[in-house]
Image 1: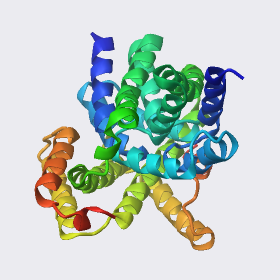
Image 2: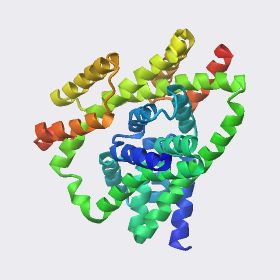
Image 3: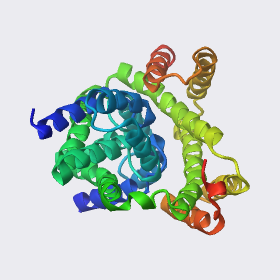
Image 4: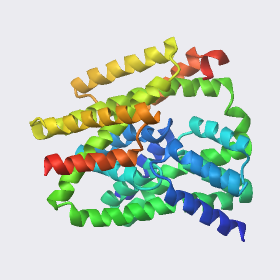
Length: 186
Length: 183
């Protein structure tokens, strides 16, 4: 089969079958890309996971781009990334069209009230999970708790700073205060 | 112009979304609030939809917000913009930057960002809890109760399965609770 078509079909399939994103999709991607297609070795996938953690954006995009690039250069990476994104795009599109028609319905309203609670739970729970997994050094704990304090105070004063400021600040603090690899590596 | 605005805002979100699926939530929340695109309530609906459909949350959210603000073209632009940074950075890494990613300084910067992202996610989670528990300044004890029930159910599930309940199952349970209690 033409490699481009193969890339497209494979990543389209991955895009359709992976829910929630992030690491949940990793085992499925491994099954296809490493075991079945042998486009990446297991080591490469592991390395890509580390790279994905160090770069912004969804890991699925990092992986599809990397695979496409490795196999067929820039064109390959565009095709596989597009194929990966397309299913979500189409499905969301259809749902959004249907949603407008149903949102007046009071059953749907009740369901979405429940879903709102689920979302709040999922966000808080994932934050707590990330905190538990975080390597607790003096540095990370001070940054974490002072930011919580600052955010709480500013929100009481109704001041909104963009999170980008805090992210950049965190990066600068890391650059300045974390020197030895021992402090840095998990 | 809305298309340009969508492009710039989602490009920013794509550049700064370090740290997994939920890292995008604080960024997208403040973007939507700042530009008065959608209310916090609608945002929660959008996240719920993103969680229960295939694909990464950030792509689903970009499509939904883009669609709500700029129709089909808006959805395409927002989705394109949110993917673009990850795409470019991955190509750069695959081609020339591979050795830099493990550089101590690069990892030091990333380690500095990590606690920030976690604090932002936890904070936005609790501020959303306030949003659903105090809609229009009346107290909705039921919403709070549902969230607490979910924590309890997940705790029990975790005890037996040693892993968190899948998000889709959580959403199914919560919608049933919504139907039972709130209809």
